[in-house]
Image (cartoon, rainbow, N blue to C red; front, side, top):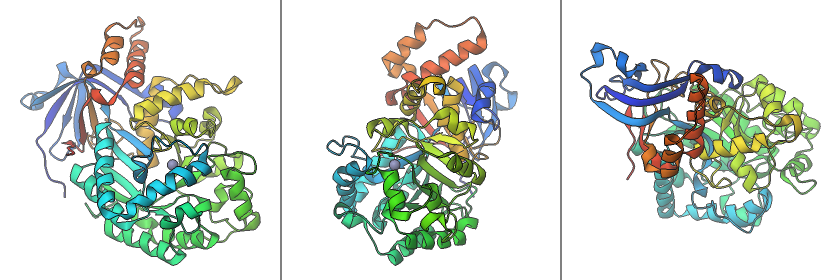
Length: 470
Ligand SMILES: [Zn+2]
């Protein structure tokens, strides 16, 4: 099924979160092997991990690739392909105005297939450069643009879950992105048939998968949501995903959340995705929630919404960089995770202006330490690494395949050379470290995650195979 590769040894300081912990348990599952070895098998899975000095004789003859550090590949659970060039957008302000003034016009340009191909190439190269081995990608409205995204991703050898952005209602500036209700369903079903798990014919092993992606409740209608619920019922068993936005902007009366409430008359925003999109949250169709459903932001959730996310196994794509840029507020970390909801990281390019997941984890640390009063929390480095890797694999329901270096998983990994980014090299070379070895390892991981830049990522591997993008 997979092409075979030459087994090899990667040697460097290995960090990963072993097993399947919750975020609160991540710290106890942090593995640090200062002079470590990771061995990949012919099928790209992980055959052995441990101290290089204990490398079994069976592997002694394999070629060795050296690096300063070896991390699991980053998982970005929310990023917008048609906003590849939109990280600089001035003139919008907060969410709804930014969409109208900046994003809808920019996304409309992908109607030109030649331009869309260029965006797909640049998007794929950018995500590869920052070590995003797996991504849940909010797609373009235009089918040829989505085909270009899947083709470029496949050529590069990266993981992708994506679906065209569905809009059936909208403002004038979104006109090019809108389709009829019927066309929206047809285009989405066609994308699923063309691309879902096409590379292996098995959603458990495929690198390429498809999601049903309404932009948000305001870009569709109860009729669209009913149709998408029916469609999702018919493809859930094939491992298709659902992805959208939730509770991002709570500006009173004119913001997103109040607009959803007034458009639908539901008791909360989540109900619109849960099949209860009729007035007073009466049921109008099937739920879109579940273990392959991921909702971005969830900054301003009611308790009942967080409980429902946890109950259904729906994950949150947390995007602190974007939330700062659009003035959306801060997702309450303690309260959200206390409900047991899985929280993974998302760059939300172009609402977020950082492609590198570690830069978003840096913002994540600052945002939650700055939450008011008892809500403030200094996230430990293992929790940050977990959120940028294993939690993402869990959000994508692919934790059994990647997200850490447990034996038998696919070798999705990053090689890092601190000498390629002087500020990182300097803090590591001149660090003051605790006498306690476990704390010292956490301090080194913290330095690595917070000071990491794209130039220090020197190798990106998916399933043991080096990712190469022109
Ligand atoms: Zn977004």
